[in-house]
Structure formats: structure tokens, C-alpha cells
Image 1: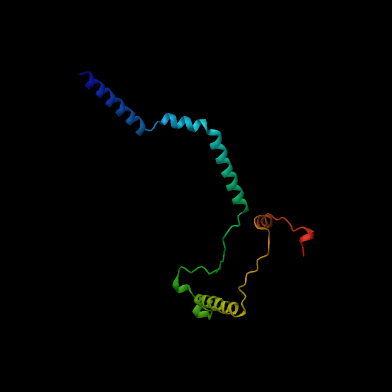
Image 2: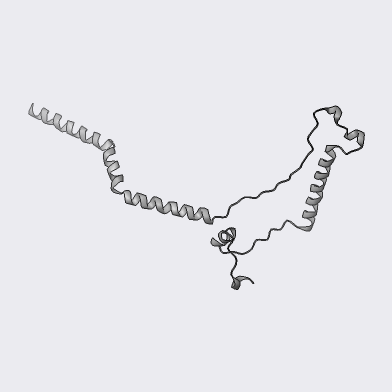
Length: 143
């Protein structure tokens, strides 16, 4: 029986060791995080500073094009609309003129190659930042 009890004890110890290896020790994990909190704070702060610098220096990428059309308020009474009686042009006529002018302008721009964008040469990272914040070009760099 002595061998059987030794075998059972050895087996129980090996099962306990196996359970300890598979388990996650949260106390030890949090202890490791607390021990290295200076490194965690330093690395997080470094990347936060890099992110702020990039956000300030990066050129915003957007383009806006707008067309505004002001129409007369429609009358509430359809019989009170006297445009046809007085010889005034209907509202659709002004919309047709806007479309025609946009078409003519578009053709003229295409024919004369007027859609060329000219971009000044600036410093790679700081140039756009300085221009956006109103810093003037120095005297020696004017030409």
C-alpha cells in the first residue's frame, strides 16, 4: 500500500502543478503592470506628443465647392401667382439659365485648360503649418 499511496500523492502533485500552469494569475499580472508603470506612462506620453505634433503639422485634406441659388418664396395661393399674367419669366427659366452658364463655363475651362492648380514650394513639414498660422516669408527668401 505504500507504493499506491506514493503514486497517488505524486499524481495529485502533478495535477496541481498542471492546473497552476494553465491558470492566469491576475495578482501577478497587475503587480507586473504596477512595477513597470513608469515605462507605460513614458511610452504613452511619447506617442501622445507625437500624435499632437502630427495633428498640428499635417495639412488638412478637404476641398469645398458650393453653388447658392436664392429662390422667391412660393405663394400659398396658386391663383395669386401672376407671373404668367404680367409677362415675368417663370422660376424655371432662371434655373435653366444657371445650368446653361455652368455648362458654358465648364466648356470654357476645359478648352482653355484653366483647371491647372499651382502649388508653391514650401518646407516639407513646417511650410504649410507656418502659412496656415500667418507667418510671413523672410526677406532673403522672397525671390
